[in-house]
Amino acid sequence: MLLEGFLSLDPPQGFRAELVEGEIVVAPPPDGDHEKNVSRIVRQVIKHSGTEMDFSENKGLRLVSGDSSPADHVIPDGTFAPLESDLFAGAGPWMPCDGVAMVLEVTAANPRRDREPKRRCYARGRVPLYLLLDRDASQITLYSLPEKDDYRGRCTRPLGKPLALPAPFAFELETTDLL
Image (tube, rainbow, N blue to C red; front, top):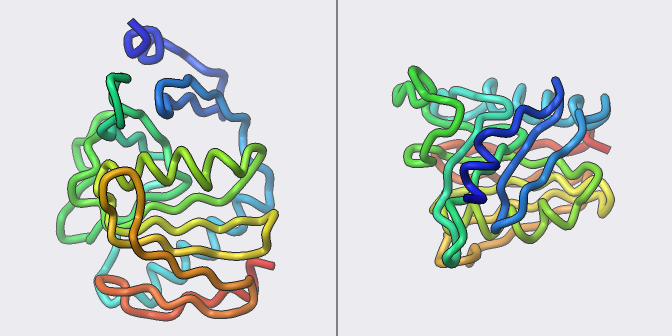
């Protein structure tokens, strides 16, 4: 019943509705600094990635839940997939995360949600890389090696220091202009 109610929601334009660990979350539109940061990261990935990447902003992902709750329905700020996979073609509003190379979140009104519940959702969904730009902490973290409810790998850098992205990206993400 929770899933049906969630799927029938029609949030106001610009708002996002997600089902995260059994809780319905409605988030307001992001601010300009949030969008600037997403754009700066996407630009670097498209320009420097070792594998040509496709990008989708606010793509709904259907993920495995951790208990008897319905499947998590999460909308990352950004989703990257190899261009050759053509992953987004024909996808509905909620697609499985198979083939996703990395998701991106930039903290906003509730940074704890990006740091904890969403991280667990992406790990359970076996998303290989989770890039979290934490504006409140002035740092960027790359989570890797998903296992069960979390990631085994974690590399955090203060903003202003580069962060190495592994294959298929294989380049150093510059973070100076994310300050």
